[in-house]
Image (cartoon, rainbow, N blue to C red):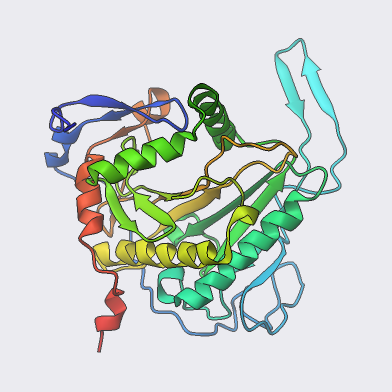
Length: 349
């Protein structure tokens, strides 16, 4: 099957959420006289005495970091969720409805180096980050009041990252958040109908067609999903259907580290900058249920559109109607796929 309307306005269905994306490929020719972001320098020192996350430094909340030499995790000093929140409900005539939410927020420092982002780390170093993610998922998920563990990274100032030291976050909470909750419904419905995971069948189709696949190894495949909203969005899917970080073999964890390095290096090479994004895993909930329908995956949502200084905005129709993109998934996949897996900084000097 080949797409016959790649140059015409059309809609694509997001299988994981059940929502639609408007695609308008003819709009790529429109001129841009809008906002241009600053092209931020990615030259940082190995250690910054003013950084709240560097080893041995005092954080904003007053706690001093240990002199760590690998990965480092700690409870967020300014947590959005708190573990001692007491249950309380508000329901006024079914019109004003609210509930307190209990949870734990953690910060994950990828490396003691202030200047090393994931694509600039070696696979062994990234594997330690993967091991830490898995340990945090297990330990937090075993808490009786934690039903979902959301692991994510906001990379770059343009994505609201409040500290330049490469790090990620974990928000673990009682309620399954909206995005994985939508995915749970879609995956469960498909599994009950077909006896296979939705992403198994989708991945097989993508591998068969090949045009949206951008990177792969023995255990994982990175692709631009057919329904992508962000210009250079990718979806990372495990070849083997499993749901949890704790289901991964050690070899699969190494493969996960490898494909993260691969895709993030390609991202950096697109515009020769430290490519900004929000990215995160969607593992199975930790609510005590089996979840045979759940298929482990990771989303990358980069905001850049035409250059290092032009970003996509979600405004107007996209806030009031539904998501919309110009460049097609197939076009962006080809562009990402052709990028080198050797980081652009390696060619300097």
